[in-house]
Structure formats: C-alpha cells, structure tokens
Image (tube, rainbow over the protein chains, first blue to last red):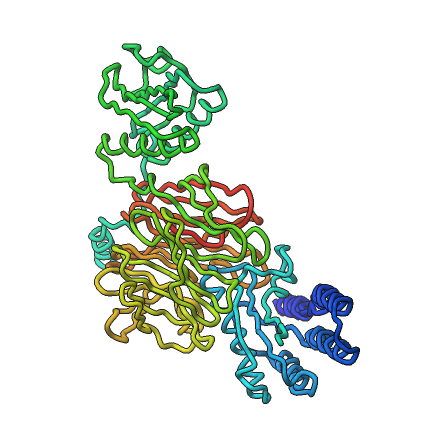
Length: 180
Length: 416
C-alpha cells in the first residue's frame, strides 16, 4: 500500500513539474514587425520634408514595434483570472518599459483571451476579467489608467488550434498592443 | 427500516408528472409511415434531396416509425403501393413546377387507402424546398394531434467563425440545409432575433472602437447602432414582445447584466457582484436566470428584476457555464470532467424550479449554448467535437436528440 502511494505521488510530481508554460512572444513579435517596417519605407520615398523630420517619424514607428516586442504575454490558469507571482514579475517589467522616455507618450490595449472550453459569453467575460487584472496590476505599478484600454476576444482569437493542454495554456492569455 | 424504505418509494412516485423525469417510448407502439414520391417535375438528384429532407423531418417529429425506402407512385392511384400495404400511414406527394418557376407540392396522407389529410404548398422557387418539407411535417404533426412543433418552421440565426477574429452571420433552417449569409466580413458575433416575426436581429460588432450592439432590419437592410460598451457588449435575451433586452455590458471592465428598454433607450444595472455575471435569460414572473461566478465557479442563479435577491438554482457540478430558461425550466451546460489536462465533456442538464430533480439531456462530447424553442418543446444547442461543429435538437417530450453538422467553420453563437 505504502509503495503504491509513494510511486503515485512521485508520478504526479513528475507530471506536474513537466507543465511549464512557454511564452509565445517570439513568433508573435515576428508577425507584428513586418507590416510596420513596410509602412515606414513608403513614408521615406514619398515625403518631401527635410531629412530630420523623416528620420524622427522613422524612429517613432520603429520604436513602437520595438516596445511591443519587449512587452510580455501574461498567462492564466484554467478558468481563472488572478495574476500569479511569476506573471506579476512580467507585469512589473512591462510597467517599467511603459514609464521609460520613449514609451511615455504611448498607450496600450490589453487583449484578453481564453482557451476553447466553455460558452462564449462566459469566455468573453473571463477574457475581460483577465485584461482587467493586468490593468489593475499596471496601475499599481504606476502606469496611468487613462493610457490603458481593454478588449476581450473570448475564444475567437486563438494562437493555436491543437486540442492539447500546451495549446490551451497558450491561449489563456492577455496580449499587449501598443497604440500611439 | 422497511417503513422508511416504503415511505421513500411512496414519495418518489408522487412526483411523477414532470419533464425532468425521463420518458422512454418504445418503437413498436408508434405507427409506421412510408413516403411515396409522385413528382412530375425535377431531375432525380433534386427529387432525392427533397425526399431525404422529408424523411428527416418526419423522423424528428418522433411520432412515426419512418420507412426510408424511396418509392415512386402515381398521385391519383386509389391504393398505396403493394410494398406499403402493411404501413399504417402513407404520405404521397407530388412536387411540380409551374410556368412562373414556382415550386409546388401537393400531399395526401393515406390511412389504409383512405385519404385522411391533404394540402397544397407553393413557394417562389425550389431553392427553399426545405421550408416546404418542414411545413408538411408540421401540418401532419398537427393533424395527428401531437404537441406543436412550430419551431420546425422557424429560422435559426448563427455566427460562424471562419478565421481568428473573422466571422459571418448566417440565417438558416433548423437543419442547416438552407443557409443564407446576411453579414459577411469583419468580426460580428452574438446574433439575436429581435422579434417573433424574425424580420430583424441584433448583433455585436467588434471591429469598432468599442464593442457595439447593432440592429438590422432584414426587410429594408437598415442597420443602426443601439448601444456601446467598453470591453464587452452582448445581447443575451429579448423578451417575448421585443420591448426589453437583457444585455451583458462591461463598464470599466466589469461584466454585469443590464435591463434595456428599447423604446426609451434607458438601461438599469441588475447585478452588482465584482466577478463575472453574464447570460441573463428572461424567466417570466419578473425573474431572470443568469450565470455568475459569485461562488468561485460559474453557476446558475435567478433574480427578481425589482430587488437584489439572488437565488442559487443548481447545487450540482463545478462549472455550469451557459443557460436558457422557459417558464419553470432551466437548461444549462455543465462541465463534467476534471480540468485543463484532458479533453473536457460538457453536458446539458434540465432542472425545474418546482422540483429537486435534474435530468441529463446529452451523454458525450462538448455540448454548449442551449436555447429553448419559443414553445418550450425543444432545445437547440451547439455540439463541438474534434473541431467540427453541429447544431443539435433535443425533443424534450420524446427524449430524442438529432444532430445537423456544419460543413465549415465553428458556430460561435446562435438563436432561433
């Protein structure tokens, strides 16, 4: 009896320790950069303004994308919208970036999302509560509330569609979108 | 001990007449019916489609044992086909096209060679043949004196996700064999019929600065904004005369239920809990049912419109995420498996506010978004399994379920 209990505890520990959440920031970042870069090149060829102003608008566009790349994706547990200590550290880092000089004038939209389980009306609300939890944490870290807007997409904006626990974990998230 | 036991049995038998108790009908006690095609127009493919639709509708009525053999006969024959001589009923129909392109069907219901019921139907063209089939099944059901299946003739409106943040709003018949896209492009969700006549609907437009509830008049094509809200905006229910709406709005990111009066454009907040309150449903008796996470997990509650009294409706299950109400009955979707680490099962359950019984309506898969028909006879729901969506119908009084798969996309939400 003892042996069975011990081996099942060990198995459980192994299973639970294997569940790490891998942020999907890198792939998302690549998706965002390309369109912004193209926009900038068009401005360069068409403008007749002096070089200085062109260089400024260039660097402004580039840094918005840069800033968005640096911002994390916040993940949540199944059916929950509370911020875990691990995610709190990411939010603290995001708030720091938001208060730096080149980001001070920018606003952010928090997009709440869910995995595929549950009715969509409830999931829209859950996504929104997740966005709201991140907003509260950002405000506590010194970001002005008027710079933050929120939207929820429920389960309609998945980053992956496999029916696996890794994919569901990736979808239970809040994304940061930088706005001018 | 014996006395206690017999007392329990006695009390159990007292609560016999309730839709929450399962009714099992044996197949051999219902009459048999065969269908004879006496059509004089149309090619073989179309005739087979119409025949199959009619067979499916007669099956859904759940009052006949339907013979599926395709047989051809003459409309004016005085006797049924020899192969059908043992059938209790024979439905003989003649589909024909007139010069103006209209689609016409004449039917005769024969009982032992005697015509007991006959009727003629006509529609503009044969693209909407399925509505004629539904009307035929409805009339035969009426003739047989069974509870109304008016929902069979009604249109379903649903939103279908075609890609992340892209959707279409579609109007269909209850089997999804007729589908007409009424709104394409963008991200528009949660469609809801605005009235009994089904000539207008509400939906949420997500592509705007704030989620906005819009009203569409299907006759004129007119679209106008009703109300917007930061974060979230859903029309959860419309009352029976279309004068009031139950909305889920999220001022400051806080989702709550509001009662909106269409004529005055004023709204009143109904829930005040700081967590999630969604999916308000009119119950009659000045009450609503809704989903709330106030106990730490989503569950079904009810509330009177005038006071802040909230009553818990379901004392079973750990996650009851969506509900619909009809009179004293509430149907809800309950998560029945453990958690984030496996395929989940969501099943539909029916409770009555008058009794303590719960009846489970589905057995497997992910069954969500239940919606009562207007007459409370049937429940429409969405079944998602391995990425494929289907619309399901449960006939409550016959304990039968039917599924109609969707060829592409996932159903996001629907109404009928």
